[in-house]
Image (cartoon, rainbow, N blue to C red; front, side):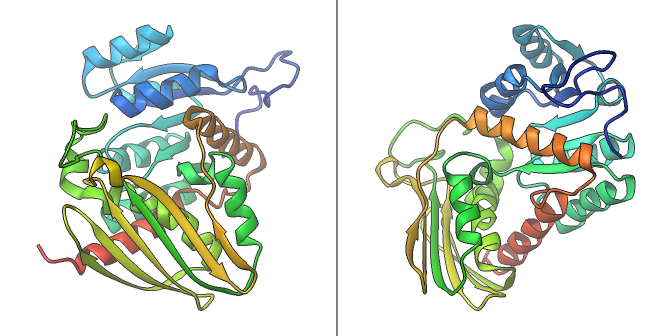
Length: 312
């Protein structure tokens, strides 16, 4: 389902048209730090309102940005063209299915869900109701990292790659991070929180994952060993409980053309705005974005296969 005829493209003469309206589901630190500021700053859409599971937090966030607070997510769906999600994955998934059924385009958070059944349900709802979807995978939208991924995906002859995302959300030697009060992160760890980021680079560059094995390390460390359809092998080391001095993110690719390292990036709200641009473009053209719900479901399948191999 494309944007309705009365919705104008970004930068177009307004005339009798309007900007697409975006509603936000979620009120936690990620919503406050990234989603809401990015939606308020986005010139190609209108930040319409907020719904949250805690009404007082929703009212506070909506008030801070001068937008409407919704007491019911279905009321938000009725008022908006796009629904942006800043919710735990297994809360996100059923609401995303409902939003797609209402004909709303989806700006999803990662992981789409932590069960294969729920992730596939989101992807199937997107396809069935012909709505656009994009999963906000930071490395695929933050510059210069996003451009670097596209450059590497155009190369051939890859041999191996090593990725790590070592977060200090739950460090053993310092204050907890900003997202330490997140119950789902405590329960699922780095595999599910930062695993999608690593895979979002490795898969488009090296090819589809054809096999995965997983082992545990200290704290919540999980190490993945992957084989790819292009023949390359890769590893990914993931955690949220790294010592503060050991935290960091990196990807190194090695192949026939040389060695290439992921550049740094910043401006996450700006990256979120580019994700919304990509979603709106997909909604207008009807061309699915390769970073959409189907890709998000595939990432969940890989992570679930890895998790099943880990000891309790």
